[in-house]
Amino acid sequence: MNRSLKCFVLLTSLIFVSTSAAAEPSSIIAPDAEVTLLAEGFIFTEGPASDAEGNVYFTDQPNDQILRWSTEGKLSTFMKPCGRSNGLCFDTKGDLWACADEKNELWRIDPEGNKTVVIDNYEGELLNGPNDVWISPSGLIYFTNPYYKRPYWTRTVGPQNVKGAYCYDPKTGKTTCVADDLVQSNGLIGTPCGRTLYITDLGAKKTYAYDIKPDGTLGGKRLFCEMGSDGMTIDNRGNVYLTGRGVTVFNPKGEQIEQIDVPEGWTANVCFGGKDRATLFITAKKGLYGLKMSVRGVGSQ
Image (cartoon, rainbow, N blue to C red):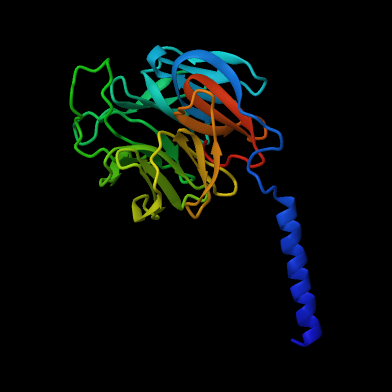
């Protein structure tokens, strides 16, 4: 390659990089956007998940109900009672998967609100209490199974010794423990390509990244960041959102890039929703909040 051609290629590359950088906003939050209270009057909100249209479903566990915030900004009750559901996630068929921990079960709920109990035990024993769920592009169902004592339980210890993460294969009906070395698992979220799964260990105050192997098992565990979380989500730049003191955002390298404060202070969970999936929905005890973003949600939210 002669010198003139090399210079042309280099100049073209620089123009492309510069144009791409200019096209992508430096901030993940939309200009002049502020955290807005959308709905209130709940006891403890959790598990937000967006359907294909961008409507957001979330739980109010003490009130035993799943609510729906429409893309038109209207609140309605989707299901009550709901098995004291916590974490939620939609599959590609439009069914809602729910961690119904009243009886330690994992449910599948169709759009009309009809539920099917998919998992009610692991190796013959009750689950500890399914907490959060994520569905991979291949259709595998990953869920965490910590133990948090509920006032509606008579048992005082978890039936399972492992408080980690599990994987359910709808094709075989088999459930497998895929992460057995966590102190107290909680939130989890995977990348849209289905190659990486993030799991937060709230008991150890850390979040880990795992490689998802072709058979659905996990490997290559590595520390992602020195922070635990209740719920998690991910955006189209690969940034990971953790909850607790507001919402803390980390880039794919595990470096903190943003801190989003919420009036209630403490937050439980997050997801992207709205018609363009460019609104961050935050559940925070008594309220549901929204924040317009420059990034968008991806995959199962």
